[in-house]
Image (cartoon, rainbow, N blue to C red):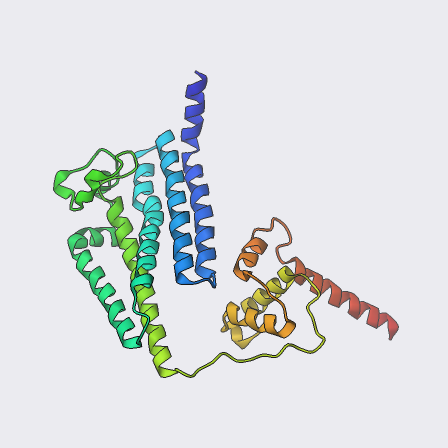
Length: 298
């Protein structure tokens, strides 16, 4: 009886367990996307955290039962492919950045265009299903995204027969491919745009900013990051049309300070339970106090 009660409790919590794992995963992905590290390093980290996340999800699904067919469909149609698609994306990026020519811009452009052509060729094998998925249809979901309900007539991806039947359906892998393809297309197009800008402005250099003499930042680095994000969010500088990275770099050079991974610092600020903008509150209180003191003197 005790075992059954524990099992029932776990089943009731399967949705929240999956949600917690995915929330942590999305936060880690955000850190990678905002990181200044090389593509090789970031893609390696992306592969690792994606594999770890899939393993956690695998254990949850193995040790629990979904509370409904719709819950199982949602998992294999949306949640698992969200992670699995990014794993495929990071693996492909890691491979391509190592294979990509390092010489002329023209050779690099040719390589990227070849990668885009390859994506188009692969998409031809599942175009009908891609249309079904992108149009958010659902009439065949009970065959596509429920374990053990495969319909041989609907299976176009034969690799499904070699996957773990407890953690896969006939089409969740194809959804992951679609997600990975979209991410790759965006990445490669960004790379092509970068190469175009590089051709047009080969001599462009970043502005040099000298530190202000005898002027140092004496509050915490976290406080400075909070101020930088506040200035950007308020539109106080160039109407908000300036990248956080540039603002952080200017402040680092201005005050001779190293802010480290300021994207991670911002994430920690967001995770505060109370007074998330505590430094801004301190600035406001300090200014109000100074004005009151000055009022009393005059």
